[in-house]
Image 1 (cartoon, rainbow, N blue to C red):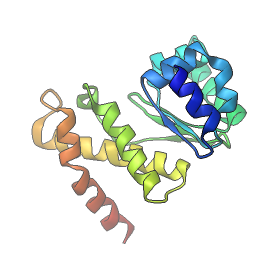
Image 2 (cartoon, one colour):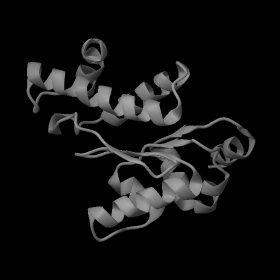
Image 3 (tube, rainbow, N blue to C red):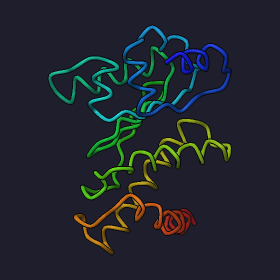
Length: 173
């Protein structure tokens, strides 16, 4: 927690925070105001509830997500069956790719790594989140076509990143 606090106080570029960092933020909500603009948070619904508060339904959770993204100028990737990316402007982007087989250990870590890689390539944070979430889901869809939902493992998603990128580039040309 002290390391994260120090990082938030000293860093001047957007961060990408997941897992334990989100749990630490949930215990120290005042730190949200000090996150660099454009920072990316990638919570699943349970982490988001700890971070922002519980809601009684998914619509109210979406309103809270949008409010939090605008208030703190964050990109938030709310992971789940219908992953949504919310930008600092309050725009929400729902992802059409992905499948139930991706609810497996390590899948979220792979998404975090993919978004980080896109950021390192120069994509802005919102673009990196939208593209990363789509490509992650598409790679999972390709893997599920080969293996089925039940046998899908996180490594199978990684194995299909190239196929997902190739498919996307073909669709764009």
